[in-house]
Length: 159
Image: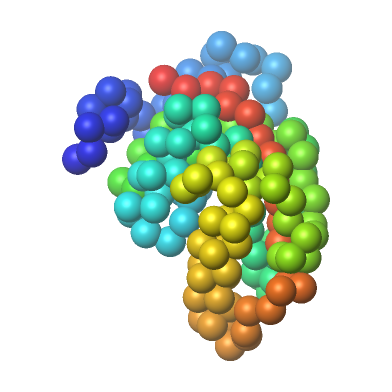
């Protein structure tokens, strides 16, 4: 167990949502629950950045939304963020969503994602590898013009 987890109150998804709704009864009734990344370690690291206030944005592969016929996130959407063990650590509210080609993701987006040195170069290196792996899993290849869903959010509740 990483040291930061020792200070995080382990709550189930429904418990954390119930606490949030009790405190903010006018909040929406619906939410999504998910963890960042594709591994326990990545989910833990990125959840830690959310709790520290360094991560206020994320990017995802538009193609997966399209293939799975899933709606894109929208401003006002609430999400329960999970750590690598599937424990609820925070609730965030989406504040902005844009879809842009990979090679047009901005320095601001990279910085807000809070990873590595927060540079666009770092963001591109890490995300090209991540997106290439996702695309390979569905028989497609990464390219610089692939659409990326850029989402900004704010933490609205954590325990």
